[in-house]
Amino acid sequence: METHRRKADGRRVFTPQFKQEQVARVERQELPLAELARELAVAPQLVRQWQRLSTAGSTAAVTANETVVPLSELRLAQQRIRELERILGKKVMEIEILQAARDEVKKRPRFYTGSTR
Image (tube, rainbow, N blue to C red; front, side, top):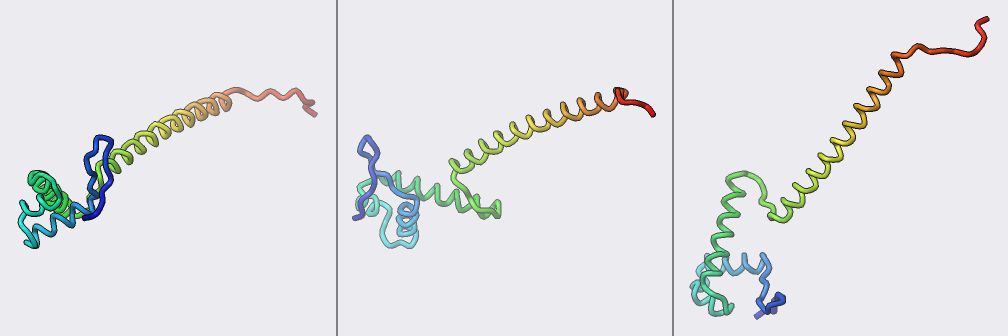
């Protein structure tokens, strides 16, 4: 049995690839779900949860005709979008202020102190 990283409280952390492999074993009927759960020393409900998540992810990908990305990656992307929108808003304001200043300068008559020969 392979070794797994453990959380601070001692629980094992299974990688997504490991979970997919185990779900595939059950789906290929290599062994019953209960036997797999005993082999991994986990509750059968956990393996069922892996199956549901795997199926839901696959269904979502097929339905959307797109790849499924992890929620954490989506949140990072959304945070980056908000940050870029904030920066864009600042730049638009700067441009508007500079354009207004330019228009004011254009309105004023020019006075030259040099000779008019």
